[in-house]
Amino acid sequence: MDRPPFSRDQVMNEQEATRLLSFARPLALSPRSCLWHAGDQPDLLVKVEQGLLRAKVVLADGREYIKEFYWEGDEFIDFHHLLSGEPARYSVEALEPCRLQLFNLSDLRQLPCWSAWYHHLLAVQLRIKEEKELLLLTESPQARYQHFLQCFPELDARVPDHQIAAYLGITPISLSRIRKRLKDLNKG
Image 1 (cartoon, rainbow, N blue to C red):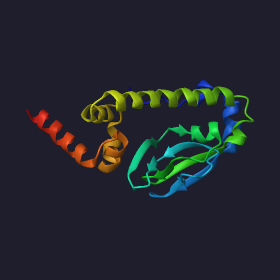
Image 2: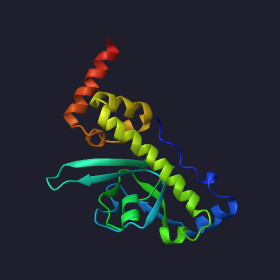
Image 3: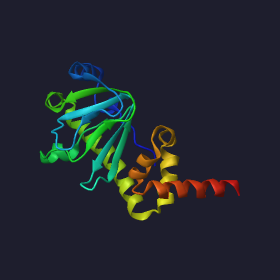
């Protein structure tokens, strides 16, 4: 399953969209810059206009896991922070030069369409999370990588190998072995 689309036109008319854009605050991020760090209070909705970001968790022992990648057209919120009021549990970092639109959630709550938009964002995120959870629970590392290639072929060239491995929950060495095995299978 590919990522479901984020589509504002499903939840707002032109007048509401114009008002929404009046709340937008543009931000440019250079690679390796953080939009927010674990421990921050990100009361934002973020729309990615250009570029690629990663949501990462770093454990006390230094191991890093990639929660999600965000690229052109994506909109995201730290739902855990929004729902619990607790600080962010992950950082969001630019992997490429990024152009973003930031919206303060307090501004968005003023819009009549906010409830419908929020439910749309929740539905999209739930579909993404359900898919990834099932992959991690039921599929082999090779099947997870094949799914990644099938659903996100453009990311394979944009994301470093060790980060793809961190997203799939495997080691970089395992990813290298899987790639070699798939290459050998395709030759034969």
